[in-house]
Amino acid sequence: MAFRTDVINKQGYFISLEGGEGVGKSTQIRLLGADLKEKGFDIIETREPGGCPGGNAIRHLLLEGDIHRWTNATEALLFAAARSEHVTRVIRPALDKGQWVLCDRYIDSSLAYQGDASGIGEDNIRKLHYIGSQGLMPHRTLLLVLPNGEGVERAKIRDGNQGNRFEKRDLDYHKKVNEAFHKLALENPERFRIIDASGTAEMVHKRIMHSIDDLLS
Ligand code: TYD
Image (cartoon, rainbow, N blue to C red; front, top):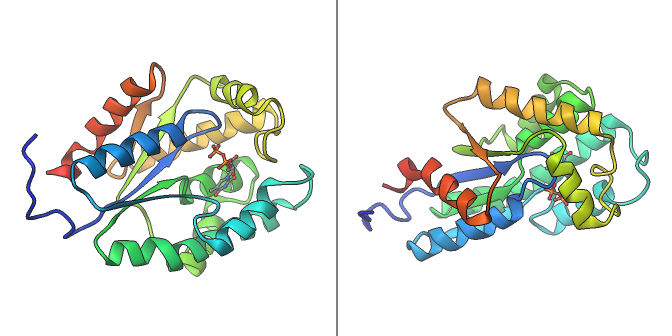
């Protein structure tokens, strides 16, 4: 593909990868990052919850311990707090420098898990996002999808049933999460691309590259 060096680094795009458990986001972020670097783009790879010291401290609170450790409201507040640190200290500065930001999960995870599946409500999650992160949204969100339940099973095998506090929730919870992601994608077609996450990692990577083709030229 023709490559315009004049536009590189002038604008960095903010791309989030989303999806239920075990759909292969981490592998795909790595492949995407490597491919974009090879093409000459200045990128950073990061993840949520986490991505910076404060975010990582909150990540431990959120993912470890008893499944009933926090109320649903506390959880939503902690995710928003972790995101606030991450946006302020990592994501915005990178975008200001013209870097691309590839983020493993972002606000749509809070909308799907806390907003819908945990019942906090999407509007409340958006308010928290506005307070914490001035409502910063990605330019593009890639939603990786597998048939219902398949990803959760994959994650359970990967983590030997020792998964984090969210992976331990029942199939019904994860079904609600997947439905919420799907609804968000349909409501925001300009930002979302739905990616079939079945097949080999290389096949999925090709689909992802195709879905951001317009950002590269
Ligand atoms: P992680 O180990 O990063 O898992 P994954 O590989 O599935 O991304 O765990 C992050 C967990 O936190 C995951 O189960 C989804 C959940 N989560 C939320 O519930 N809300 C959020 O806003 C985010 C970012 C993650």
